[in-house]
Image (tube, rainbow, N blue to C red; front, side, top):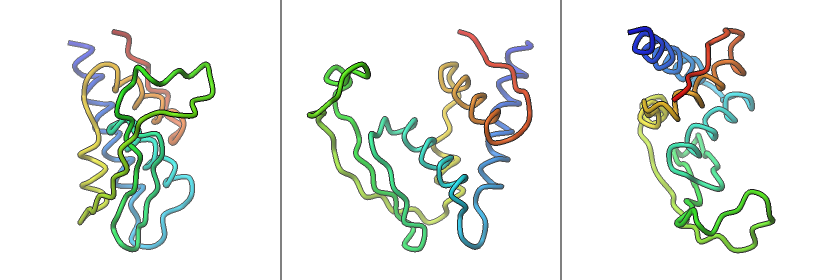
Length: 124
């Protein structure tokens, strides 16, 4: 029961952080980094860049994780270049939030770094 409450709390606070990070005017660099981290995690992307004025996100999605080794310099990792359009930044980012345990630990880490709240990390 405690894990269920913790999961709901992490997801609710992530949604609040996403809403806070989507201002009407220019997005700050700090929040742009949050947006990039969410999209990279959700789409397994190597590179992500936002064009907030045109409501687009460009990314290079890693096609095969077996070719990626974080311990070496990767000169050739097959990627798919994608250019997605979104109508609502907030809605798009909320759709990138997944609720499995591996992702919840990632979100707890983001909450720690973007807010000053001490959200306990979840363990599988």
